[in-house]
Length: 293
Image 1 (cartoon, rainbow, N blue to C red):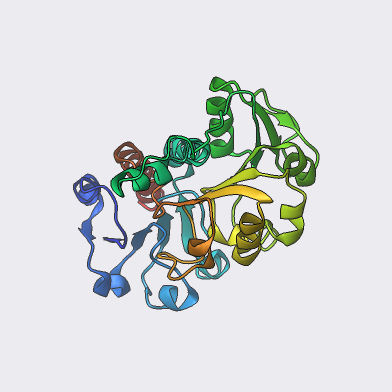
Image 2 (image 1 turned 135 degrees about the horizontal axis):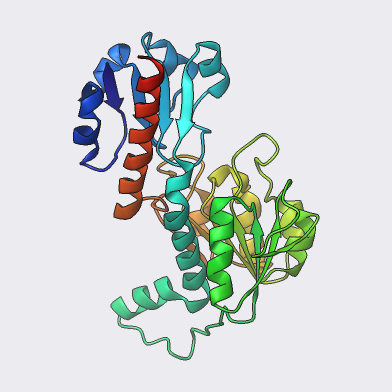
């Protein structure tokens, strides 16, 4: 059995998986691979899958599966899995870091100091303590963020299509209610047809004036032009994102908007998380091998 590691994983992973067969990172051997490991860079399209006639399993190291054509994979009898359990802590911590960065002007402070400026009077901070955080999507990561926010004495609201109760947030029946009440809004939804562009001109108009929005989920949840307009008008106080329409994003209009913070899709890229992803992959492949003895 050939296992193809198509994207960046922990350097220890090839040795861990060698007990199952040959492990390679040579993408030119896709046509030989029985199992392919990807993260967000590799797009498992119909064409990609057709180029892998021996493929039996795709494992996406991470939470989402929007870079895998799941319907076509199912038609070809290919198993598709992810490692959703592994990334919870890493992404929740990154979302919280971005939420702290915006009202404390961390990036602007650093840049101005390097330029010889002393903006002690100009940079006005606000505290998270006592503010309301609205979480859109209460899966593993959304709930982990809620736990951290409560540690900062924040009030936490949540909306999720099929979550009616949790100990960690006050559930609202609609997204609009969360938008209207929240000082901070954090996105934790998968990219589906129903969620694509869900943060748009209309939904942004329903936010509290000056609200901050954090996105560690998927770039295409947000209509970029609408976000730029809301930032320039002051309707939205700041936007921090780790995700984009593509990796890398090229010349997104967001780069010209005020009060923004950008990170290069590193939410899941902690050393600890990469090791956890490897543990989950090992278990998934082990179960696959056991079933096919």
